[in-house]
Image 1: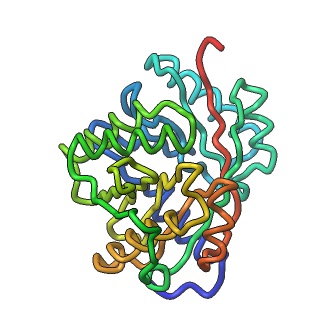
Image 2: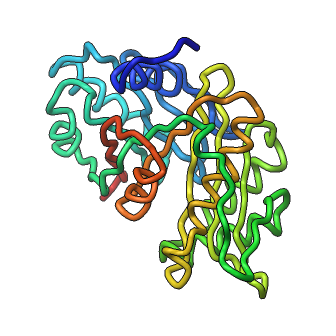
Image 3: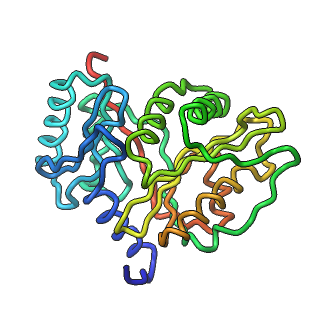
Length: 268
């Protein structure tokens, strides 16, 4: 990969390598090019949605593409379908068109990227806290528990995805836990490695409220960054919430824009 000169160039590399030429994020799912969009398709417990749309998409083409994705979602009987919209996607009013068609926007996230090397330094952990790689179903259950405690949302879908990934396609996947002295999970995170792109994606990283601000999240970033560097990956990429974005900016992550999940739920 040649050296990017600025944020626009890194974003072009990201759009091409991670979005337009997306790879399935786990076993049992597939990536399809459907006219002007690229989408992932799987079962009801998998992530289903559009990851890329043609930058030349105009208003008429956008409406047709949105209608086609609704028909696709409905025909498969999926409980929900997401259009992952980035701020630089076209046409400029694509979000409004998605909303008019019945998609509901969730909270936007910052698209952040940083060189993996500088993020891989050692970070001290609070007394009694240790990091533990996740390699089996028992570890995945602790990840789901950490997710539920950190975000207040159901972790069953995450549990299903991590267990299946560890059992069937672990080669480009890394998962890690932070646990307290009693073995209770206080933070967890995952990393997707995208061969041939130079990018590794960091996911999760939610920290239980009582442990926030004590370096646990930063330690999980550094742990995954070290593995990324060892495996030859150049960049770390995060879709960051309002909680994690300030931490990542302090660690040197560059904001390339925002991404907003637009979710369609048939029958609602």
